[in-house]
Structure formats: structure tokens, C-alpha cells
Image 1 (cartoon, rainbow, N blue to C red):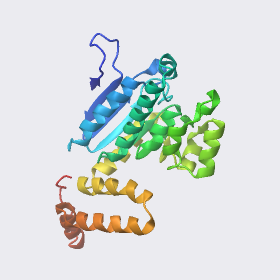
Image 2 (image 1 turned 180 degrees about the vertical axis):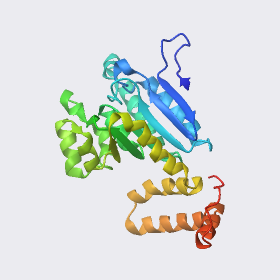
Image 3 (image 1 turned 30 degrees about the vertical axis):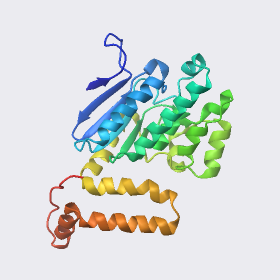
Image 4 (image 1 turned 90 degrees about the horizontal axis):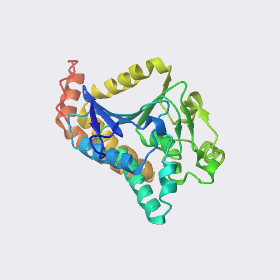
Amino acid sequence: MSTVTDRPATAASPLLLRADAGGITTLTLNRPSQYNALSATLLADLQTQLEAIGNDATVRVVVIAGSGPAFCAGHDLKEMRAHAERSFYDALFEQCSRFMLTLARIPQPVIARVHGIATAAGCQLVAACDLAVCSDSARFATSGINVGLFCSTPAVALTRNVPRKRAMEMLMTGEFIDAATARDFGLVNRVVPLERLDEEVGRLASAIIAKSPLAVATGKRLFYPQLEAGVEEAYRMAAEAMACNMMGEDAQAGVAAFTDKRPMPPWQGR
């Protein structure tokens, strides 16, 4: 496991941990006593790591995790109080939005590993990841409304995962939903007991790693833009992506193996 931080080497602990194994890179938010709140420095560290990962073909899947009792409690409100200036807020929310967009723009699928609470921008982080696996004790809320702050930026990701009336209820009440409800709403993919969380994340990651890297990257690159397009434009984009994908070495070899009833060949990479 490597560590990532822009604090001095003498600091007690880094803000972000990185571990690489078997094509999976795990980035662990490491501010447990602050419930992994997203400080400006932590967001910068996450951005740096994601940009590097996006250019690293050896990384097939990214996992976002949290240390301590919480997954992520959102923005660091103490830091925000200490910098009560519009320029700071503008820069902070721009930085956070860029990070959330980068999650969607890197070619590797990103899985949220949610073991505890995910509130406000932490709930946004779960929604912004491509996939999410949570423990049956995890809970989710867009709780800014409870302190007079509507979760406007979390709403962007939330409303692209959850039906609008359910999203509006979360945003307007700030009330928690449990893991089973989050799955029913579409916020997470899978719910398992805490002791099986790593196993289930690994199972999902392994299923992706077994597929062609080019096909996975092609699919992710298409997925979000086509959702935002009209249906005619979405089909145009999808047809172009599929034709280009079919011209690739992996698809040519994979289709040949399937039609000839042979084992799938080793994939060549993205």
C-alpha cells in the first residue's frame, strides 16, 4: 500500500491511501476522525490520483473506500467556516465538481465500497461512481438541508441515479435511507453483510477485469454522453461506438472464438 499526501512527511497520517493489486487500484479516504470529510487538500489528492490512473493501462478497476467508521461525511464544514469567503467556496465546489466528473471520464470503472454513512457530498461520491457495493449497515443522506444548506452539487449526481420524487424527498428532508432502500432507489448495486463487503467488491471487480479492456473503456466512454443526448443522437453515438469497437482486435478475436465455439482469447488491452 502506498500513501498519497501533500502534507509534510512528518504528518501523523496521509489523507489518501493507495493500494494496487491484480489490476485493482483502491483509493482510501483517510481522515477517520473527520469521517473522511472532503477537504480541499483531499480533493486535490484524489484528482491527482485519478488523472494518473486514467493514463495507466495496468489499472483495470478503481475502488473508492473510506477508513474509520464512515465512508464519507461530505465537505469539511469546519474548513468551510474557517474560510468564509466566496472565492474559497467557488474554488472548492469547482474542485469537487471536477473530481466528480473525472470519475466518469477515466476509462476504468469506479466502484464505491461503502461500509458506513455517506452523507451530502459523500452521498454524491457514491452516486458519481460507476458502481457501488455497500454493507447492510450503510446509510445515506443528502443532509445539508438540516443546517440550512441545500445539497445542490450532490443533487446533480443523485438525480442521475435516483427517480426524481425520491431524490427530492432526500434533498428536502435530509433524512437517512438504509442500505436496502438505497438499492431499491438505484443508488447502489449490491448490499451485503459488512464481513462480506470486500469479497463482494472483489467479485464485481473480477467480473469486469475478465472482460476486454477495450470493450469496457468503449462502453464507459459512451454510457454517460448517450444518457444526456436525445434518443436519435444517442443511437447515432452508440452505432459509431459499436462499429469502432467491432473493428478492434479484441472484438474480432472474441466473435471468431464464439462463432467457432473456441475458448475466448487473451484480451489485447484498451
